[in-house]
Amino acid sequence: MKILVGIPTYNNSRSNYSIRQTLEALSNQTIKDFHVLIVYKPSPGDRTLDVVSKFKDRLDIEVKIQSYGFFEEAMNIIFEASKDYDITLTTDDDAIPSETWINEHVIFHKNHYRIAIVHGITIPTTHYCYEHLRTVKLLIDYYKPLIKLMVNYSNFIINDIGLLACKGKEPFNGNANTHDYELDIGIRGVDMSFKSGPYIDGFSLPGYTIRGICNEQLLALHYLKQGFNAA
Image (cartoon, rainbow, N blue to C red; front, side, top):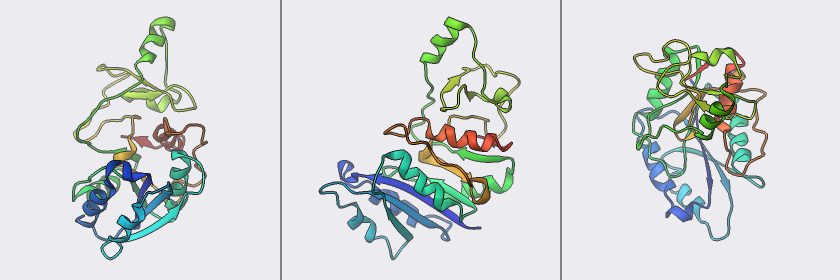
């Protein structure tokens, strides 16, 4: 199985080169056979690549320079590269994955064929949603999933730009919980993996925000349209 880990990074000097801890954690993974793609957007005075170079003898690292655009354009570079891999994981340049991070995602995908995109536990964990949509529901007393497949989800998308609605504690139709995962569209890229190869083919983010708002939901929607689930 070919595994890709994608990390977008820009001006990591602002966090005292936290990417050092990210790469250190990746070098300690229980699975060793994976490729790391760092999408680096240069900024004045930033020396992130000096930090990255110190890990090239411990990790299979490739750096691609992002010459234009913002977060969505960086992710599109990762998505394009992921076509050559079976599983792609993404994380942030200030995150520290556990040593079993890659292995847990790989096992999950092997055991759950119909789930194509998943995010795991992050610490601190935050359940987030767009609270103003609750106000919308009060005003019009109605919102519904964009795709019928999402009726059992704890969150769901209501339009084609990835805007989320939260159902709260009560399931929309049935119980979405299982013993080890929950059907949920609220994917977070810091701890995300998705089935790649032909399944990702044809997808790219439209590039209309600076910070990639709802980019994960648009990727999940790409899979739901193929009949897969998100969890």
